[in-house]
Amino acid sequence: MIACPCEVCHSADARDKRLRTSVLIEVEGKNFVIDTGPDFREQMLKANVLRLDAVLFTHEHRDHIAGLDDIRSYNYVQEKPMDIYAEDRVIRAIKQEFAYVFAKDKYPGIPEVNLHQIENHSFEIEGIPILPIRVMHLKLPLLGFRIDDFTYITDANYILDAEKEKIKGLKYLVVNGLRREKHVSHYTLSEALALIQELKPNHAFITHISHQMGFHKDVQAELPPNVTLAYDGLVLDI
Ligand SMILES: [Zn+2]
Ligand SMILES: [Zn+2]
Ligand SMILES: [Zn+2]
Image (cartoon, rainbow, N blue to C red; front, side, top):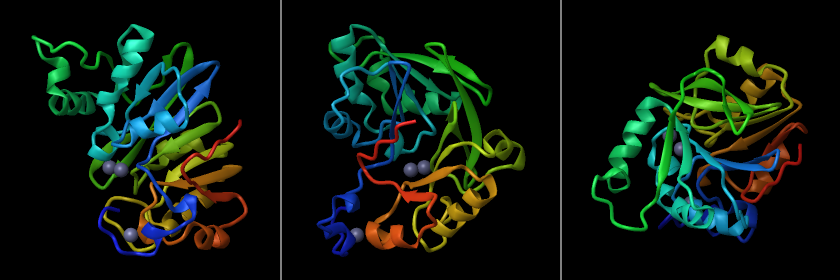
């Protein structure tokens, strides 16, 4: 965190250097990202992502959409608009936040997007089936996504039983766990662990981690063997 004097923010361990939450999914030769936060550009450069086929958005908070402008490089290289998948409310927020992208009289070189409105029903991107999972972020309904046996859920602190049914007993679950202390709109570490116990994935990963969680090595040492505290650059080969 900017201007934070705490030990975690000044840790020498690379796993304590946390950029904003996002994931790159490579499936059948296609690359998708879920969310483009303020660190999107740095993340794409670090991971050397030479091609991006689509962006899926969970919700419209700044830490999940602010980096959208930088898709312009993919527009340039791939010579086409970027396919964006989001709910109606999120699309409206993106149109407001990035009004210049949707202006009638456009300045040359600005990002080009092809918007696809989704709902809480399965859909396909490039023939790959995606199953949305409705989760709650305090009072804001947002979407997690299941692709095959992998599910990604960020910024949630409540999930209805019917939605949990969609992801019971899957292989890999990524779920947010912000810190140890109670939070109004995110699962805490213990709440995330309780959800993992209930859903019983083979392996779970905790993401959207605050500096208030503590050092990676200390937290990881406390976790059950099937739970990993995620870190930037973590690669999962499924
Ligand atoms: Zn700090
Ligand atoms: Zn949020
Ligand atoms: Zn967030």
